[in-house]
Length: 148
Image (tube, rainbow, N blue to C red):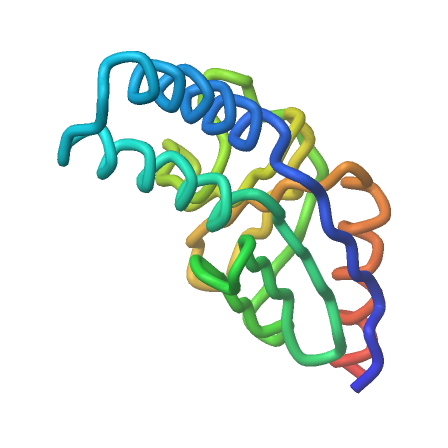
């Protein structure tokens, strides 16, 4: 299978926020002692950094995939179902990670640049990329080769 595009990006906002929270909570636990709740909160912060720490986007001739950290959550979009794509900026307040936004689902690791993928059914999906133009071009190239 020919890969037209593959890019991984560190989710700096998520890793920094979870890391800072873990450091503060760890210091509090060290100073005041551990409780069940504080241990669970620390585990949740570390899990969030592990799960959402890296976003990898790949385009091949069959599909577009977006996977976080350990392979979950993930999204696979068949190239044949894509109507069109366009690079765009998404406001920072829509957040990072995998989430539902007014335009549909969004997977974003860092920054505000995304590529909006519109399916033939009208559903939309936004995927973050440090190179939105290159990602949109790779998807269009895969779509054109699929039409031939």
